Picture (cartoon, rainbow, N blue to C red):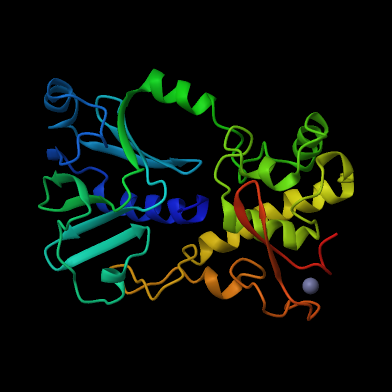
Length: 290
Ligand SMILES: [Zn+2]
């Protein structure tokens, strides 16, 4: 699933490509994916200009001139592909057809939604497993929705003090599931949780009540550093997936524990272990993390 750094990368790319463009058509091939009916499609989406593209947690929000938002969640296998003539740019779930810089063809059998713009460009929303969604929301609805999401880990509200106070409220919970819960902290997923806990030297199954305030401070800092570095490298992709600029998400080269089961820890040489915690594959170094 794309996490905060991958979604942030898509948002930055889309900002350059679709802001100030008018939507000339929007076609939901899969009615399950979208929440708008024909009347709203005609009156509230078609003909609108894109004012902005932003991120909240793992959500992408496309703001229209009428101050409605097209809010997208890519979930497990969603991807957005922008195409104009021979140029294209993809973000989200890596698939085999994107392993080359030669342009694949769209729509394909995973395409669920198509948006056409006034400059002749098209945005495809593909999703093989169909968990992703797009919702038209008024400004109040979008605000309401965001109020249910947790703090942004790269905002100034995400401080040592915040994390210490938060852990104190959840003494009997294990640390990793707390970090994954989008109602508390928005944007962390499996990869960046494991990486942050390694850098902070904390085992993923530790109880919140057993984490010292010094460790919580270290963890808050590790989360910010890991996410910032990952954004710099355009996120993490595990295959030879490249976007239309021929770029890969290079953070895979900097991962310390995630996906490294059975390999030596770069820091101490011990073998990285994998366990299942709250239903998620969890990677850690038994020596560096206590
Ligand atoms: Zn180690």
